[in-house]
Length: 152
Image 1 (cartoon, one colour):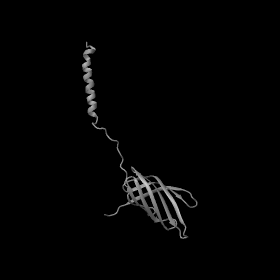
Image 2 (spheres, one colour):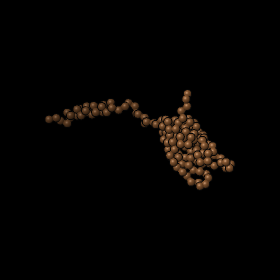
Image 3 (tube, rainbow, N blue to C red):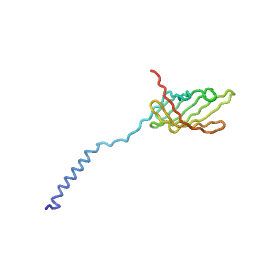
Image 4 (tube, rainbow, N blue to C red):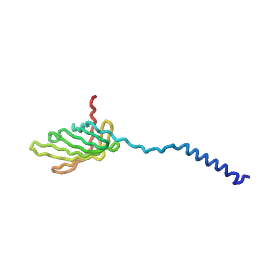
């Protein structure tokens, strides 16, 4: 028979081996959480459906830019000013677009997107158009912008 006193050194030795094994499995330094890199949206983008272009500049997560194209319904030049931000692979923006009709009246509308998903070649998301002219009805729809790669 073994006494509990004679088993004490064996149990202590077994505990030390278990602690050493656990320590050997753990990293000597704590690992940092994975940080997603922010997408790069700087450059020229075009909407293939209507040839509307963005020229975007990015500084960190802040994005500014201009837009240009032809208004599909009335065929006059349209310009825009865009501000936004990037977080991971998501681009959020607001854009003010304006155009002048043949009558001399200038029309303005706001565009907003909370989640344009960005890849290296394109970005796609739901954009809401808020016109400042009658019937003042907002319209939302899927928009895709494709990056224009310039030859070096």
